[in-house]
Image 1 (cartoon, rainbow, N blue to C red):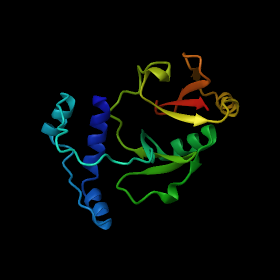
Image 2 (cartoon, rainbow, N blue to C red):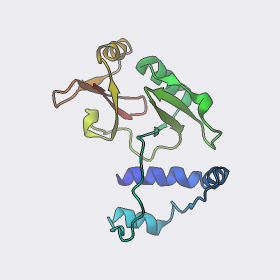
Image 3 (tube, one colour):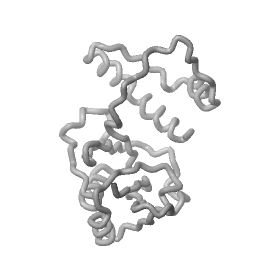
Length: 180
């Protein structure tokens, strides 16, 4: 969790000039202060957050996209589209100050971001279910299993007995594919 906060902090601090412009174009205000040591230490220490006079509950509509750190956009786009069958929607990606791509995964997207990865890529658990991972629903596992086998991509089946498998991309990011 702490490493993820550092990654988010590093990413957002690189977007300090982008976020206020984006917010202004929507008629909103953006407060950027993600990189302050005191706010990060407060989050890491588990400081309590006030619930007094809490505003109305947010009405969430699901996850729009998940950001994934990668080392090479061309290599990753080829792997995700060829091996996993994701659809390249990079034409929808705004002009950001770093290379990246948008890939369609069912009704959702992942945002591949070519940025320095603060996490170690070696020494990760062999089974992705024991590591940070993104879970993706899939109607049938069989076609994916065929693609993984055809491309010699290692995977492990779920340890719980569910119809699910875990694999990693070329940068070590773990994915779970869960048959629905």
